[in-house]
Image (cartoon, rainbow, N blue to C red; front, top):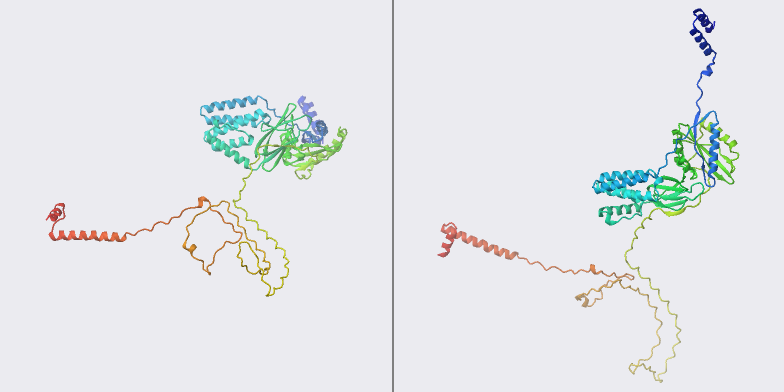
Length: 565
């Protein structure tokens, strides 16, 4: 078979055409290229690298050096491509505070014009501006937020929005539970509603918040909802559930975060002053010493935002004199994969060589992801220093003490006296002879002729203990007239009810004493009514018979004439 190029060349020679010669050269080049060269190159896997987090005991410089070594290793791989993180959001400027003050002033002006709905809108704008930038909530910003929430509650209630007013009061009490208001500046109905809301919220279950110490040197200052706390680590107790705002400042760098307090749950935050980048949430979660589902989801969001298959992140944990490097993959479908751990010295001298193992493991796990470890996953960090305890809100009110009824306890039983020791009785002397005179005993005040002395009687049995009735706590004497039964003698067969021993007589209170008077018997007037009716009926009958006999119509004149005759 003849080559097409030869045919084309002959045609070109015949026709003397330069176009045909060009086509012949292109066709020859396409035939000479192998088919494998025409196939599209294989797509590289894309990953994004997040900075390592330095756990307590590891310097910040070591974490930055480990992040640099990992980035260099993965960038040098031919089958990997590094994606760039989105740029960090611009930090809030102090110019936001004048905007808040202007919104508050506008709301006050609208209030004077009785335009409460418009004033509420201006106040809501100021509150949204403050709460969206927790780093602005220092002492001044916290006071502005409390003022706005207080005024918003007033305006909404004046506008008739009770639900919105209650929500604003809830926010006010949650963020500033110790705030006092002047009674002369607010209507009584509002003061009653505020007091009721405060009692209800302070009686509900509470949560707690722990602010860990940020990595690095220098003293940090913590503000919670604009109120200053102690230096971290610090733990705030008895927080009212809901939104709260933490602000940490150190060396001119500011960090802020919104947290949700949950009743019966301890919430932890790890501040990173000066690190407000997109990976700050992941790093803050790692600084708590474990990886939870929230940290994995935050890393997965960063991977999807960068258009990568996975995000590589980890932490440096102090392990004796060495630093243990823990690295993980967060896939874009929010799955977690553990990578090979490393142990390096404090200077990370062997990091260039050992990071090759991490690069190989990244490629292997991207091709065939391993089973996800159980979450939360502890990183094995040392226990952080103990946090100082502060009171985030007034303690819950003590429950009311149930008072027992005022009843005196039953009297203690009287201990029976021990029986007296038996008395030794001397034998009686023999009876004197009849010739001897009888001896007399002279007793003062007794008759001279005394009876002869009888022999001593045997010892009587010890008296039984009698129940001592305790007098009533409040004596009340009710006089009563004697009845015939009291004067009559008691027959031998009559039984007398006696209160059992140990029973206490209860005294009557003055309020319980009432005089009961029997009403006098009602007199019957039926007989009088019968007699009166009979007389009236008899008179009517007699008058009617008289008129009938005389045939006259009963008129006044007739009656007068009749009776005049």
